[in-house]
Image (tube, rainbow, N blue to C red; front, top):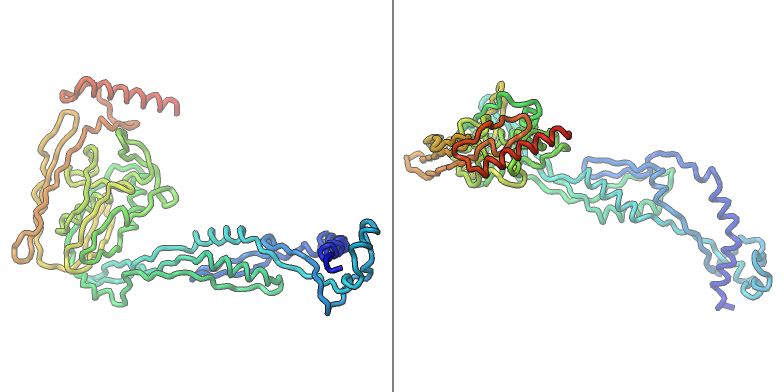
Length: 435
């Protein structure tokens, strides 16, 4: 009769169906108080999983198995819901009296994995170095260092599933999820040991006349630079320090130069910040490794020839801290003037700038400019002699709504350039009418 074991199990399942269905329809069984089932912690962050969510991830499977030491609670093992002859041939009374009902808790792994992935977006972060400021000639911490966090998603999923398999609504659990921690590179107990004691260079620019969104973008961007430390020998990247530029990071649409037009985009005005940082690096005697001038002269960046355009991911502004100590960046706004101050250790260097000088100017506003950075050590030896040439196109080749319009062909334009310009102005007018 042992060869009929599976058939016996199926028969018992038929007998159990009414009671299983009754349990499923029991309102009391489906009512779950929506209290926290699991409290999950990742570093300093805690997230609670409600009972209703935990229950939605759990299902139970009931099955029967033969257990010789177990006496079945089925009162009538010969009861048959199907054909009597079938039951007579397949059911054994002895087996029927030793069938044990068991259950298995099944957790929806995909649902748990999706939850953990979303949790990682909340908890994961890069390590952040401490930021500093100068007060009364002393360097003080105003934003402490923060270690990085990367949630171990695979182990976290396994831990949550294990907890849910033993879940009881009356006993909520607290689970510390595993994560990798990355320590910052700058976290000093005594920041004055950095040797930052002097103002080594300053850069300024004026954003008078800027629209409201442009001013807002400038203020959002400078938060990423105020208090930043640059290590000795480190190459500083403006774009990398700036980070993402979009609405989610607090930026507003404003005019930027893109392709052959000036059009609204998130972060318009950030070049005011990069230009000012470039000037601070120049006057600090730092080595510039990447810098690009704007496509056309912009009045915000007068004097022309000392600007630096950036756009994520490129072009970028880069320079090397060629001093023996750390450099601390301090940024402030006074009226409509943006100021970058670089603090560090005075090593006796001397910086002189020749220019900027406009070397060529065209009737359409195109021009060329140049300046030279000379840096001498304390003994008078020159170790930097860099020339920065800038070539700017005509601003009329990058028209924007509401901008100035040429009524006559500039003398330095070809007929084709004038024709293309007039067509561009017509296209812009049509686009404005449609909008």
